[in-house]
Image (cartoon, rainbow, N blue to C red; front, side, top):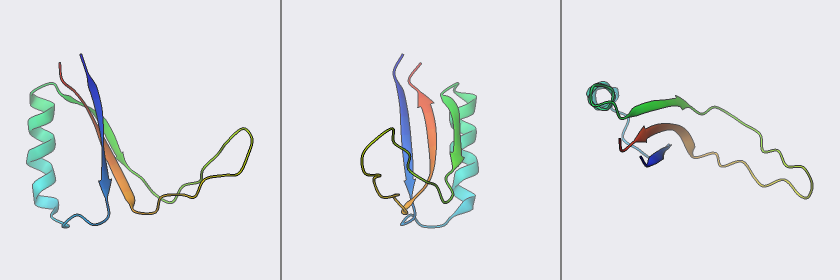
Length: 66
């Protein structure tokens, strides 16, 4: 079974009406594995210079191919 993470960018058309049916279909098919909005975050690293935070990522959806 393959798993995928789709990252959502802030350049998408804001149409909340489209998300419900999409997520419902993924859930009913047993593909939806989770997801979340991504707020303002920080980057962490054991050593070395910290990478910049990617501001245009706003969320993600995790699915499996079953």
